[in-house]
Length: 448
Image: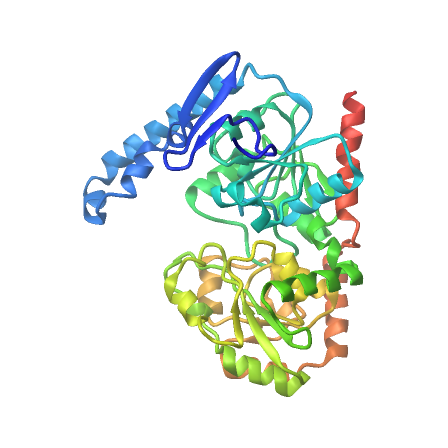
């Protein structure tokens, strides 16, 4: 028997990923591959690279055919299913209980609201709730399973931090409400991705009912990229609420320190770079952790440890993980799910182009840019505004980073942060989750 908080599935075979579900009195037994329409993708992954390259046009034809069949099957399955008024599906691209979605769900649970809260998650979270601190009252569904399509097809509300709810082209029905919380905050990187992502981003404007924003700057980003007509909710980002609560910051610091067995008197720096399109090349995100540790100890005093969190696209790269392994002063936190908890715990933050540093500065702690490949990155992805317009000093090598840290002036930094937030017209204030939940409740009241 499965956990009572796991929704819709009667049986689940981990090896074959076979789901058994009751629909209209009949058992529908599908494998995950069948539900997703990705038989050929799975086959391609196990064929020698040279064979794939030679037969690629043929293989791609069958991949497209499989996916088209999957879309048709999902529509047939979901079209006649009724919407459940108090059912809400959360989907984070991390495939777990995290990011903005988590903090909205937490607020719903705190209030004891009568919503059926469902999270689409990966297999590890599905089977190990305790490992991911998933609270009671949250029901779990495997993303990409028949059960996940059933959840999306019957939920009144979809709450997303990317394009997860429509990634498999689930049909959205009249009466369903799609709220997008996104996952950036005053981010500098231009929006983009692989061809499929761009195609879906353009189409998503027909599905998304509301975007939650945290600044006039972000409003313009959404309006001028893929979603010019989508209404915006000027609420702030729920995941940042904790950064305005000193008690909560201290609580989460204690949590992270206990998890990694860090002495409470030790200070920590969080280094978390973004990924590059060439995910196998990690040369641009190398950093001399020992030099960094020594510099921080000279500048700020005390003992320091370096917490490294690789981007989810890089965290399985053996070369990168080896870079930070087996050193007492370096903690590999790449598998730690909740980035905001690491942000709350760290005394100093360092990144290249990742938007988390713009969350980090909200709590007033020192932040630095360490970017070895600025010119290449500008040409490949591009920025909304120059790095030089951020409050952070910029280094392209370890020695310059050392100098920037030693030259750090807390008063000048605080003024620069305030000027930056004023320029972007940021309206974060620690109450975003409350506003999102109030808005959902108002829609529910209106529906009734």
